[in-house]
Length: 447
Image (cartoon, rainbow, N blue to C red; front, side):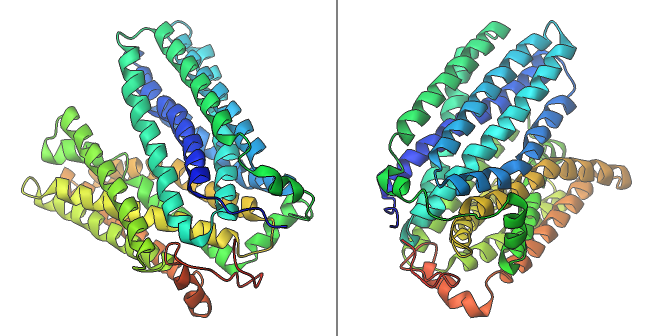
């Protein structure tokens, strides 16, 4: 007996969970970052290392996904991950407040907290994506991805604005209280959203054979599949290019174009607005039949490369370049590419052996996490090296942006090799989630 396909109400409920995840994560990655560097006058390297730690821990994603495959229940893993994330978020705020009076113990607690944050994101995020992949029909996939990620971005925005208001005037005690209340609200929202979401059909199907054998055997089987292996490498290269520009865009705007801190923050808002625009554009275009998932992934990578080449030209041209328009284009290109890539993940997750969706999503999630862990180091390190080797700061940034563009072109080449020719027609039917999709491996139509 196949479980019932998710409608829009179920998709929105999962979006609420993603919003709750985003709310906790944004507090730890932005607010605590600022408090450590500004209020506590700690080296900027500390939050950078903590952030990288939480990404490195997410190499556990394949194991988490395999666990949810074995149990055939995703919601307990999502809820368990959210509990870990909430505890980690609160502990991170407590550690930051503790650093004001006891630096070393506070740093140790912060490291443990960010490990919990990484484990929580790995368990909840992987299982949530696996649940979407297995229960959302093809015609809703792009819309589902857009809905869930838009709600996550909304969680970022609402939390940043609301928490910021309650944190003024800043005190360590106020920070701990705000983090605690946020963690409790996020957990309450998660419990409400997940209540009876999977339904009795999944419970009846729980005994079905899935993910037989141990984790290592299952992982080896998935890795032997050419498409899964190539897509894993594609995700790493594309996300490395995507994340490498993130930490150098604002310094670039300040050093080359003379932007103030406030103006560079507004430039980042322009980029995020472009990302949201690209997500919506890809989803709407897919629903109307304009292009396949594969075409949008390729197009998004190439467009991102062109936008980065534009930033390289900006480094050479200087103040006369339309920087805001260029950054908006970069955001739109990466947004369209991201939604198409997520849709591709959903489709590919269901094309192998039944009951391995969580493992596949975990494998690709781990690849993305490692890319993000390295991306900031690669981007900032390359820019520092280029500034040492090149006298002109604009030329240094131009070199780094050009190298990132090459990474996106390499990602496009990798994406072109996923599901080539023989399955291109089947992939095109999806069209970012259009009509039915035949699973080549299983020979049946997805629910």
